[in-house]
Length: 144
Image (tube, rainbow, N blue to C red; front, top):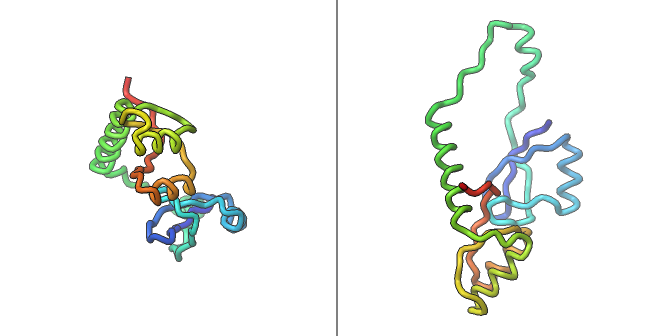
């Protein structure tokens, strides 16, 4: 597995996981890479530090241990996940009809309501160009 530091044209940084460098090049050439923040398709690879050969290091020094994750980070991750689940439970899932419903709400064709769904990066850019505010978020299961 190859983990790369990536950046979109708008300057948003994020990680991408690929099977190989060739896999990254193939996906980039086919336009399959989009920024998870803004949806821009212009994604470039940033310089990154080399990965350590952990297997070899463990074999050479078996007493080596990995430090436990920071408890504050775990608590923050839990809070973010909880907030996303609360948000999901307070919105209507319109699925693939997201862009259509967002437009209908924006242009007053239907009553205003909070919705969530799926849209491509290109669709998100089109909505933004029309003045329709959207916030890309990871998909989570709503609270019951």
